[in-house]
Length: 389
Image (cartoon, rainbow, N blue to C red; front, side, top):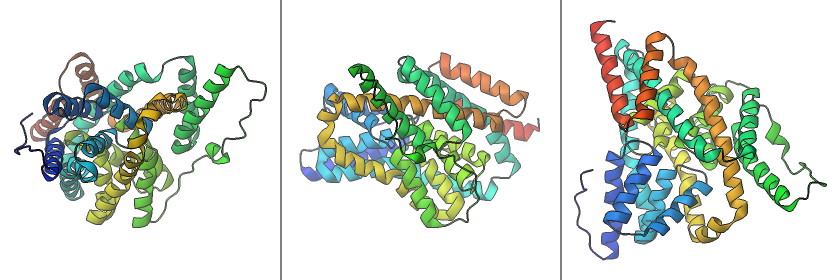
């Protein structure tokens, strides 16, 4: 990665500028999703600049897993806070989000103009199977860490079944964490006589019904605020919530638009969660894009500010550890359901299936950056359009 153009000095103002321009540059150049972002952050702030040591970096990384929200952005705010105080906290996150947000808004504008044009359709035809392949690869990798034992496996299976039946994603995610933490505590204490699930809220078993609501900006903002407040696990879990909220509950978007948002999030650097910017623009123009972005990222800023001083205690808490295990298993289950649902819109014929299989093989068995695989799919779509096959 090319180094950003700035000079570091020891003053507070220079540290604030250092934080902002470093994460701004990363926002322009950091492709590949949360795992890749974490590797880039480690290289830049631990190895090169030595802002923190290995243990502190791992503590911060663990803390981002314990709270909802986009993990990459949360790491930026944590690191910015440690380096340059509250100004670094704010500008670190903003610097990382801003480039991706602006790029996604530009692509959303083009999409609204030409989204139904033949050349765009050809490109998206090739990109969609690649996106499914990337999510499947992430699902496989995450399963090795999330499904730790029989208990987490059973929880994931239960969440899949309940989600297919229509139980709300938010309650499945948080409820999975609570149920697993309580079950683990009861097993450890061998006290199963008075087992009661009366503590579970009745809304946990609420079946979500598809409705079509009239669009308004306040609902748009609070819908993304809700998603940003409960988004645990990989960034790809976001799309399970997007589909549940905007396709099934509100009826504002289609499965095709959700997949297109995934594709846009993949071909732009920075946080994947700027897919919210894309969908906000589709629904409400620039105002909708800004409100959707604010709603998605605001909870992570608030939660990082609240939890940063508590990281040492959170790290050692068996309750938080068990809760996180349950949340991660539930997140994985939601990812599995949404991949199955979105695959129907991606694998429309044999060539699309072939693209998906080749992409899956490349993602799993090579070290090629997923951005290049997506770029190759874009080029394939362009060539296919011009050659007419």
